Image 1 (cartoon, rainbow, N blue to C red):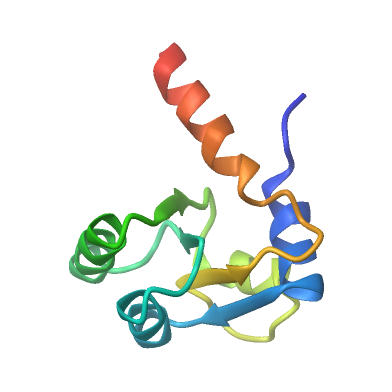
Image 2: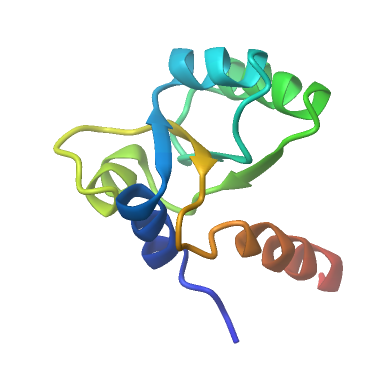
Length: 109
């Protein structure tokens, strides 16, 4: 059964702890915080590359969201564009299962 990314991201925002923004995500990663970094599809390539490098060196996971930052902001219930967010505490969501599902899809191609 497929997990709905929008539902799980919203549940994490509502019940857990989430930090928005590229600089804030970078700060949290460098502190060793966070479980999952989510990127919208319109984040600048150089910013994404820098954050992905930090994510991998810290041993954290990343997820590419299928839509742009405006849609991601709407999903999170925010009236602004969100290019990057980091899940510090997933709360009652199953957002971390997106990683496994994403790996399964990539491996089956």
